[in-house]
Image 1: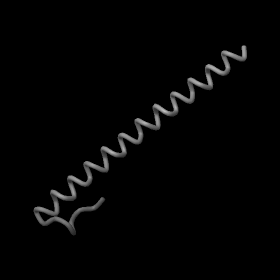
Image 2: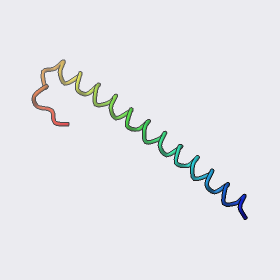
Image 3: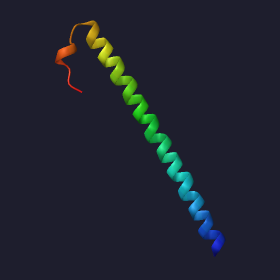
Length: 52
């Protein structure tokens, strides 16, 4: 029984790491997208009109 419990803990750890990686990748993509939008807006003169 102990091996099964340890395997579940390892599985949870792998799932948590995978979830964390996915969240971090999504956050990075959002940040890149916001940067592109902000730069594009600045190029056309919309700096003060954009809310985050």
